[in-house]
Figure 1 (cartoon, rainbow, N blue to C red):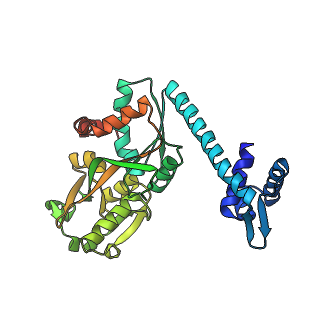
Figure 2: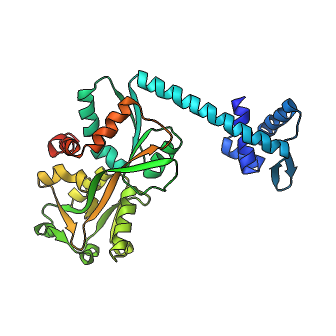
Figure 3: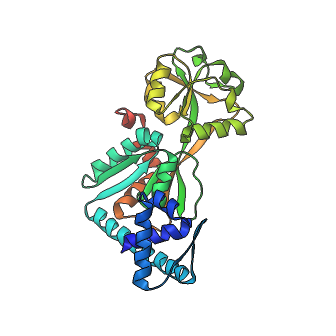
Amino acid sequence: MEEQLLIFKKVAETKNISLAAKRLHMSQPSISLQIQNLESQYGARFLERTNKGVSLTQAGQVFYEHICQVLEIFQNMQETILTLRDEEHGLVNLGATLTIGEYVLPPILTYLNQLHPDIDFRVKIANTEVISQEVLEKRLHIGLIEGPVYLHKELQIESFWEDELVVVIPYHHPWAKKDNITLAELPNELMIAREVGSGTRKVIELALSERGFDPDNLNITMELGSTHAIKQVVAAGLGMTIISALTVCQECEHQIFKKLTIQESPIKRSLNILTHAQTAQTKNERLIIDLLHNHELLAKVLSIDNLAYV
């Protein structure tokens, strides 16, 4: 029954059976049959069919409004049951963007595991858009993101850490005698960058533009999909990069890299917690959020000693 209601809802919202079939990954005849069964069951015609698509009849509009309420009740029931199940089994589902997932989340989970070994963590690593969408659809209860996110009334976003994006070069690079660098000098060196669409890339391009520097003037020779890959290429002497200071703590400590700040104005960004405004966190999820808000403790967890295993 629920499947039929979901099909009807999709048809009503797309106003096109073919489009609804495509989005539901079903055949058009199957969609039409389900609609016919519903109309037969209730003895009313719900859709007016035209060459341009379909539109709701008066009865169809009434049916649509009610099934939206019914499906919302179903969804809330499922979420409540899943939340109870996860809490009972000590399971926490969370998502993180790539930089956070590689360099921030591991020491946090290690610390929490030492204190609460009964909690199991299931982590999804993806870009900002994917994590945001999964939090919005309530498949994840917590998202940790570094990129700008489209504001939505059902998404709640709050900062938990201020990260600085720095110019990173090999320790024996000619620039290594400096502590900062001007924007005008950046095009003079080959640059290794994150791929277009990554949160880090977006923040860098926006920050440079705000400082009057056209990102297109950067001499980008490689675009790579992970910070780890970028670090390897930079360490090999193939160029410089602009990445999170958090990701190069160990290498700077061991004099593999030298990090430089932008002289005109340091580039900083917020690392954020993303949650659904209508979803209550479990006790175990609150443990993570409370730790992220405890800046003094978080600083210790993210210290060089704790990052040494990454």
